[in-house]
Length: 304
Ligand SMILES: Nc1ncnc2c1ncn2[C@@H]1O[C@H](COP(=O)(O)OP(=O)(O)OP(=O)(O)O)[C@@H](O)[C@H]1O
Image (cartoon, rainbow, N blue to C red):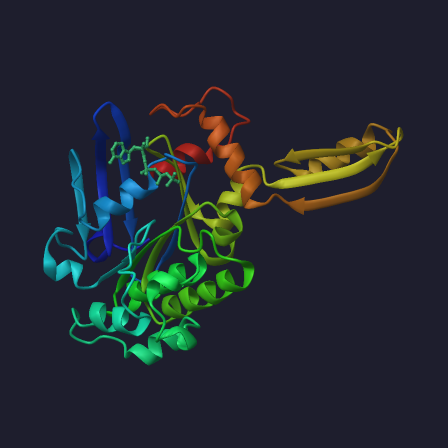
C-alpha cells in the first residue's frame, strides 16, 4: 500500500445517510497511483454513493474524502478525473463525434476524437446521432467520454452493464490499456467475472461497510478458497468448500469411504463473495470473532 500522502483517493471514516437510510458508515479506503480496484457489493451496498463522494458530486455527513490530495469538489482535482455514471444521459440529437468533441473541449489536452473512437471500437459510429445507438454502444461511448480528458483517475460505475460478450471484451481491453498507461481505476461491477478479469485489488462493500479489502488472490485464499468434489460410493456427487483441501482429502482417505472423480479447484470470486457477505450477516461494526473457523480476514481486511 502506498504512503497516505501520495494516495490518489483517500476516504477516511466516511458516513453518508439519505434520510433514514445509512448508505455508508465508517468507510475508509486509500487508492494509490496506478491501482485498479474493483468495488464489489450487492444492490444498495453503497458503491455508487462512495463513487459520488470521491467525485465530489455529494459530500459525506462526516469523515473526509480527498482526491489527489484535494477536496474533490475543487475544479483543479476534478480536471484529472474521468467518470462514467451508472446511467448516462447523452444528448440524443448530437452525433457521436460531436459529443466527444464537446466533452473534450473542456480539457486542456483532450484525446483526438478519431483516436478515442478507435480505441473503443466506435469509429464507424462517429456520424451517428447518439439517440440511435444501441444500449451497448451508448455504454461504450460513456466509458470513452470518461477517458477523453486524459484523466489520472477514472471512476467507472458498472461500465459494462448491458453489454454483450464482444462489447464487454472491447471495454475490458480499453480499461486494461488505460490502466497499463498509469491511470488509476476504481470500478464497480455486479459481474464477478469482470472484477476477476480486471481488478488486482477487491474491496467488498455491504450495508455501507467495507467487509474486505485485499488482493484478489488473498480474498480468494482467505475465504477458505478450495472446492473439493467427488463421487461417493452411492454414486452421488458431493461438493465441499474448505480452507484446507489437503487435510480434507487426508481425512477422506483415512475414513475408508470409497470415492471417485476427485476434483479440487480454487473457489471462484462468486463463492468468496457469497461467503463474505453471508458471514457478515447484516454487517454490524464488530465482525464475528468467537468462531475460529470464520475467515479471520474479515477484520484484518477492513482495518488495513
Ligand atoms: N439519492 C438518494 N436518496 C435516497 N436514498 C438513496 C439515494 N442514493 C442512494 N440511496 C440509498 O443508499 C443505499 C446505497 O445505495 P447505492 O446506490 O450507493 O448502492 P450501490 O451499491 O451502488 O447499489 P447498486 O449495485 O444497486 O447500484 C441504498 O439503500 C439506496 O437506496
